[in-house]
Image 1 (cartoon, one colour):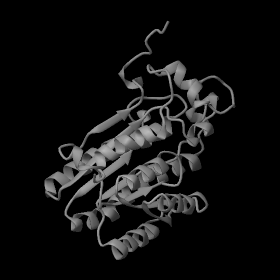
Image 2 (tube, rainbow, N blue to C red):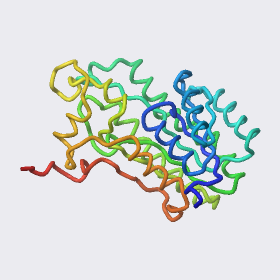
Image 3 (cartoon, rainbow, N blue to C red):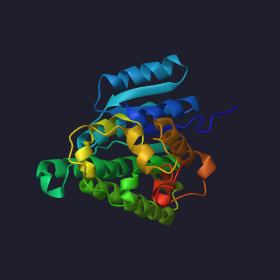
Length: 269
C-alpha cells in the first residue's frame, strides 16, 4: 500500500530533534523524500542515516533559518537535486521563558522573533516559488497553544506563535487567490514531552523557582487528558495536513493539546 505522502518531496526545518525529528521519521515511513534542516550538525546527519538505514529517503542540510542567504542556498539545492518541492514544514523555533516581561532582555526578545517569525517568513518567501512551479502542495507552520492564549512568563513566545497563526491564514488566502493549489495551515501543540520543555524554568509559571519544568508532571495538573503529548502525536497531525487527506483544508488551526484550550481541567476521582 502506498504511503500517505508517497513520492512527495518534503522540507522540514528544525528537523534534528523533538517534533521535527518525529515529522521527518513519519514522512519518510509514509513514502516522502525528506530534507531535514537544523543548526544541529551532530543529530541531523545521524537522523538522516537512521532513516536511510530503515529504508526511507532523507538528507540533512545545516541551516540557520534566520539567514536569508542560507535559505537561498537550501532552496537552490532542493531544486537542483529534486526539481520540485511538495511539502514545507516550518517547524524551527525556540522558547525563552522568564518570570516577568521586565526580566526579558532585548537580545532574547529579538532572538525569539528572528527564529520564530523571521525564519517562518523566509521559509515561505523562498519556498513558495518552487512549490508553485511544482503545481501545488502543502505548507504547515508550527505554532503553539501559546499562540491561541496568554501564558505568564511566555509573553514573547506567545507573541511569535500568535503571529505564526495569523501569518498562516494570510498566506493561505494569498495562495487561494492565486489559484496555485497550495494549502497553508498551522499546528498548535500543547505540553509535549520534548527537550524544549526542559529548558523552561518553573519560575516562568509564577512559582518563583528555577528548576526546569517536568512536562509530564505539569501536564497531569493542567491537561484534561492528564498527560503530556508525544512528538509522534504532533507528527501525525502534520502528516494529515501535508497529505491529500486534507485537500479541502486551508487557513485552519489544528490544535493538539490534550484538551487544554477547551477549558478548565475536569475533576478526576
